[in-house]
Image (cartoon, rainbow over all chains, first blue to last red; front, side, top):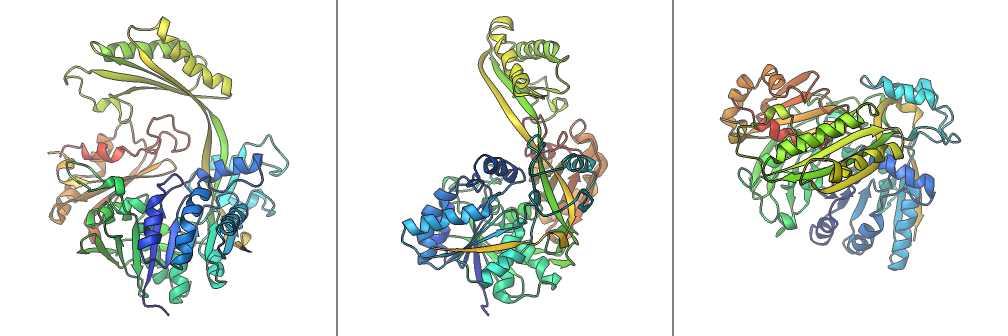
Amino acid sequence: MKNKIRIGCGAGFSGDRIEPAIVLAERGELDYLVLECLAERTIALANKRKMADPTKGYDPLLERRIETLLPHLVKNNIRLITNMGAANPIEGAKEIIGIAKKQGLNIKVAAVSGDDVISDLGLTNDDFRKFGNEDFALELLNKHQSPVTNNQSTIISANAYLGIEGILEALQANAQIIITGRVADPSLFLAPMVHEFGWKTDDYDLMGKGTVIGHLMECAGHITGGYFADPIKKPVEDMDNLGHPFADVFPDGSAIISKVEDTGGIINLQTAKEQLLYEVINPFEYYTPDVIADFTSVKIEEIGKNQVRITGGSGTEKPSTYKVSVGYKAFWQGEGEISYAGPAAYERAKLAGEIIEKRLKSQFEEIQVDYIGISSTFDIRGFDFAQPPISEVRLRVAAKARTQAEAALIGEEVEALYTNGPAGGGGVRKYVNEVIGIVSVLVDRNKIKPIVEYFGS
Amino acid sequence: MKLYDIAHSRAGDKGNISTLSLIPYNKSDYGMLCEKITVEKMKKHFAGIIEGEIIRYEMPNISSLLFVCHDALAGGVTTSLRIDTHGKALSYKLLEMEF
């Protein structure tokens, strides 16, 4: 058994920068590299691509990431764990094998699936239980009678958040690259800890500690000064070259989080605390498929430049259900924007907003009118109109529509302000997007089993 | 004085819930934040944005507070018409609070 393993995190979302992972693989002396690339809605969009082409549905950046990373992974003997499989881990694995062959490299890839519960697992509506107060999810699922054949259905994906099980199996089978569909983010990190240190999966204290480390790492740059910097109060150096983190994890479930020398960013008490609390709904009970972790005993210490030691944390028995995220076609969103600047900028923008609202309110149930620069991100009550004159305002109008054509009306109306609205408006932009909504339900964990398949080059 | 002068914050999102951390730069300010930044004060400050319940967690282990704010994202991240659907900027709305 090793007395330490080093796990790097080279991506915290699908669109993350490519090169921090390469720096980690090249110079990080890693044992494992994790790329976390699945936000809530990513998999629903991926499933749409898979429906259009059954060989697609994995992360669109997979090819670029793997082509540049693979030589370093092989040379430095680093194992990669990633959820870039999205809606199609098997095709993603085949794509990786194709790249390896082209580069003349010999690797074993494992695809972990089984998270997709929309296809043919024989789940009935009774298997879906209410999660929180999302009655709406159940209503959708009840309407969704024959998932495979009914193209009119509004549901486009339903994926369970799997835990470490499938990844563990693949690690034991010596796969060098493990590509998964939906897996809870911390599980991507916990799996190699369990594998290397021989932790028992019902040792919930260790599962909790490992989950804390995974949670701190899963957003990559979030703990190295990314999404943290504030030039006045929290300056961060060299953000154009932000380093992503690695964790030295020890068999007792403690860790030291750091980053590669000569990369930008900062790791300190502040960055670690911000990330520990990020997206936590209850710090006493942080639910994952592996454990219900307790963050209230976690200790963070600064032990050197860009080095924090993480100790503590605990956990209790894993939940008897998996959380399943259901993606559905919600509505079409139409948007239009126009700018007003100079004297009476706000007054003119406001007149424009009023004109649009009057013209559209009978047709649309929900219209959002924002004055960017004044009241678009916060509520208008927070704005002090006694401040110096406003030099520039951008009007934004957004509304929900049933059809694409109806949604397009919003932008068309804003554009028509050019000849029918207040003086001096400029820079119109129009947008129409189909909005995919996500709701969650719970499914008995016995109904869902991870599937692991292997591919070689 | 504004919270911005003594503390930092990051907003997170889950469905229609916004999570807001409040972390003092100096550990010694933690007790004072516990005393002054109450759920009532939060509700008033976020009127018009957070429509549901706010739960405050005290975390003495890291000298930080966590506010879990329900019905805070205009229906939820994926279906909100707001420009900042995730409520990412709400952390700085919190730091704007006078106390």
